[in-house]
Image (cartoon, rainbow, N blue to C red):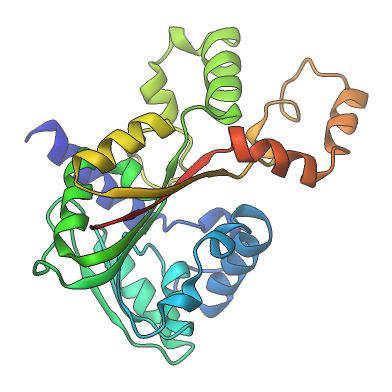
Amino acid sequence: MQSKEIDKVKARIVWGSTPAGTTFGGGAEPGTKEFFENVLKKRSTYELPFLFELIPSSSFRGMKVLEVGCGAGYDAYEFCRNGADYIGIDIAPENIERTKKHLSFYGYFPTILEGDAENLQFENDEFDVVFSNGVLHHTPDIEKSFKEAYRVLKKNGEFWVILYHKNSFFYWLTLFLISHILLMGFLKRSIRERLSMIEFTASDELPLVNVYSRRILRKHLKNAGFNIEKLWIRRLIREDFPMSSLPYVAGFLKNLWLAIPQRWLNFLGKRFGWYVIARARKM
């Protein structure tokens, strides 16, 4: 089996056993309404409060929307709630049933299918919007997935994508400088292997994790044919830094760090945050 296919098999195992948002589930069982609402609350107030400020889901009412990588259905809920004609796909078959069950609690029954971002099972020029949040940095050939998004979009259709940002505090300070260099993680593993360890999973597999600078993201989008309309950088929270967990940081310094207002981190996050978000268009 080729390495790209191995990465996809691992992705099915990881996200099938551990749906995105599990760490915010409060111990509730995935597939339950309690789990879904716990994760929704944490995402909207702490993890991704900026998401639907930048991506106006209410403006997609009546539009045909494809979500690539629906996970357990968090963003699907927003699209359905705002009247989009929504279709979701996910590489993990377990997520198909999870999303259907979660959305059914609110009376939504959209089409949810198993699918591969690099080989979409839809016709050309079919969708008004293609959306993917925190998914395509796990795919082996991101440019191919962008080209597939371009193919299935109608003329003038929008592509929204959210990826891990390489030029972030979390990547260069916490993962690379502290974990990989100062704590000598390089003696045990490569930086790529260290990246794979950031994802929480109940399985024995580690997923492929890539990071992208704004320049590289622009390059991939242009190569796929897109006109890039806007790029944003967002999300910087205390957990992105090593201060609270390093054993040699004195207690009073940790307390001082915890006292920093989140609004200051939000300001820095617009340049050094962990997510890079793009809005592109098929012209």
